[in-house]
Amino acid sequence: MKNLGALWLGVLSVSLCCKGQEAAMKGNTDPGSPPVVKRVIHSPVAGSWYPGDPEGLRREVRRMLDQADLSDLSSHRGPVLGLISPHAGYRYSGGVAAHGYRLLEGRNIRRVVVLGPSHRVPFRGLAIPDATHWSTPLGEVPLDQEALDRLRQSGGVFATRPDAFAQEHSVDMQIPFLQVVAPEATLVPIVVGQVGPAEAREAAATLRSIVDDHTVIVASSDFTHYGPNYGHVPFRDRVPERLEDLAMQAAKPLAQMDLDGFQAHLQSTGDTICGAGPILVLLATLPASAEAVPLRFDTSGRMTGDYQNSVSYFSIAFVPRTGPVSFENRDLLDEATQKWLLALARETLQRHLAGKPLPDPVREGREVPPRARETYGVFVTLKKHGDLRGCIGSIVGTEPLYQGVIRNTVNAAAHDPRFSPMTPAEEPEVDIEVSVLTPLEEVPSFQDIRLGRDGVLLEKGGRRAVFLPQVAPEQGWDLPTTLTHLSMKAGLAPDAWKSGARFQTFQAHVFHERP
Image (cartoon, rainbow, N blue to C red):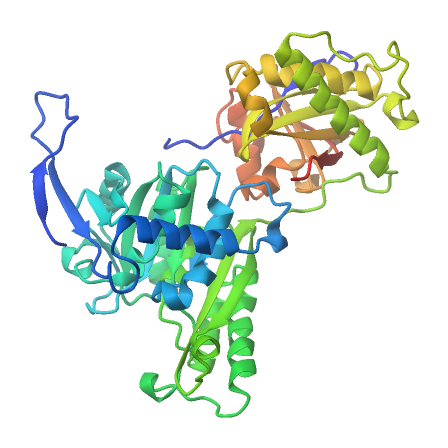
């Protein structure tokens, strides 16, 4: 074990990577290809459901985002997999929707799939547009043509239906928020007609082919429509409390990623959730290990003071479920030592980028916590706006912990072969995470690996690769998916883990800087 040396660790990215205004699109450099015709879907509700002038709309969206409270997810640094977001006029639902979109701000989001229910055109299945851009007062958003072509070619439940988009507000109400929080993202708009669990699962099988680490799926949906105007009056007393209780009942199967349970709630209660179809597709597409986090609930009845007719609004985020990432049946590093090591890593990064001598706490006469003098394997991970920027460490401890933190901070910033060396300008944007490792232990079979608790070293045919314990929970992977990515990281076939591979596990005490 002493000869394993330092190994690089990284999260393996899974890359895949209307009103008709028509004009030839620029940028087609292939002389053998026909010109691509620009076709724009224009917002059907700009100027009524939200402000029609660019400055007023941007100011309104920014105001709602700034007022959003993310205390429930203040420490979440992993990816955001999906959202449920309401789609009424911004006067009513905008403040609720802002809670989900505030969570997306500052993240490297390159593609957003928006699933909206069809309010005007009855059909079965899922509709995709025959367009290249979507326009709101904030400008035009390019549609992801490669992703749309993949859906179109899959056939099945997907069909090109321009009529489904002509006057549909459920998709459009999400776009101004996206233009502010993810201005570089492309859009995959989908209008969902009548679907049940079977159609949702069929759609999900295709949608997963366009979902990567930089894709977010938004299910556009209001919740209970209550009152005689909606033909739904299941109760007449304690209406505010019972509307919230009904929403929480609907949220229970969402928290368990239980598609059939959500469908059972709709059937048993008659709950009038207009985006039930998009929510079913969202649940079927996201990994079963995802976790639903309620962010904000409100009703139009509370806002107007009149519950005779009321619509409920719910913002819910879906993030990877995080298992325990700490030593099990072992002493943890005390909080003071954690803070000292993080401060040392930050000081090391700053000195390295400034070209100054690295810290030497002992020689400089500084007090070093006793636990920081012990020998552990340690990794240092650098993340920029939530995305990996560098990560290097040693599985086997060969030096005092504080020295390992200094060395691996520099290595993560300058010598991770997947990234260019970090520049001084990036330093304020980078968060530091330290993972202190227990000794390696061989396990008889991959079935003995416990995701969330165990980091994994895979070896086969002279090749090896490692994932820290937090990798699988952050990515939302189950065990077969984790081992598939680990095999590919080692340069092996995706299914190489199934036979002839050796597995060793370790645990990690993970701690990071707080905002």
